[in-house]
Image (cartoon, rainbow, N blue to C red; front, side):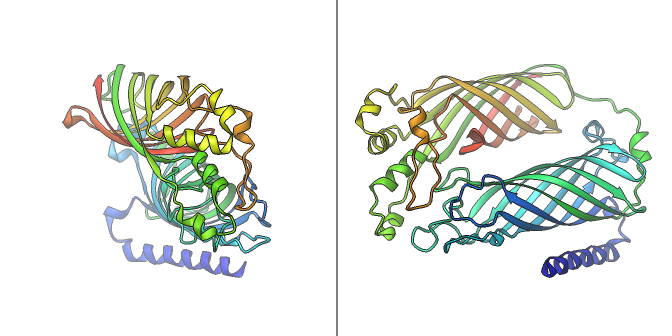
Length: 426
């Protein structure tokens, strides 16, 4: 506890130093400095040898406050949000286990979008979203750390979402509290990787370079928007890599568990995946567009998947399955949220056509006590999916765009997709 207080005090001192170093610069008047401490709980509690599930996170961030003086139509439409860049230390090493399992601390760099929905002279409240990368020094090893089979890569994607309330103690200082969901995953680039989901809350101290005056955000004049209502059409090519959970289970079944070094040498291959999408959305406001999309997905590991299923489930179930076709067809509902040329792109879809072999209650009954994995099936196999990511549109290049997204099933990653495409229409 004392170590945590020392860290919090040190971060606060850094905020004061930043103020006295830069207070004379008008260019930095819109900056906000934040220090935070929070407590999270591993939500799934699925590791049989885990004794404790709580951990602390400490963070330091610098933010930019958008304001009416910029005359930015998007800033006004989103209620003049704050954009933060931060660093956090998540003390996953706080986890305790009944065996020799080790979790390491996570070191994260992330960007944050913070929107205020309620503004008063003393209070403000809203929501925030975090996107970033985390470094994981101590990960799964079948010989030296077999219990840490949820985090198998040195580099992880980080996502956070939550709500906050803030009390303004004066013109510059404020204190706040938030509740956050946090997700860490490698996007199925390597196995085993069940990811880590946590829920928790924290407190923070904030210092503003410019005096806070809530009234200026409430009285800003309307700004003429420069978008046109109408339909937009997007053609997108995507690719990524996927390590198959079914192959992992087969790999475990055929491994000599008395020789875990041999298990470690049998690496699960990450297979390339491809997608082709056609979306039609209607843009009805500066911020939002909604529509539908047709997705074609192509997997390159059907032979390996069938061979794995024969090991895990047996020939009878495989022979009676719908078969193994590398092509899947999806139909999705789409939502885009815009900030200038950036767009958050979210789709929720279902498969009218998808043949990936054995798919039923038996896929959820696999487990391997020797390696400590939970009883989970191959979540790649199901009737629905989700995709969420970020796109950047380039009007000077004919509305060509680049992007990345996570495709998942039941909020468990299938693969990380990088894409390029073109937008037509308004």
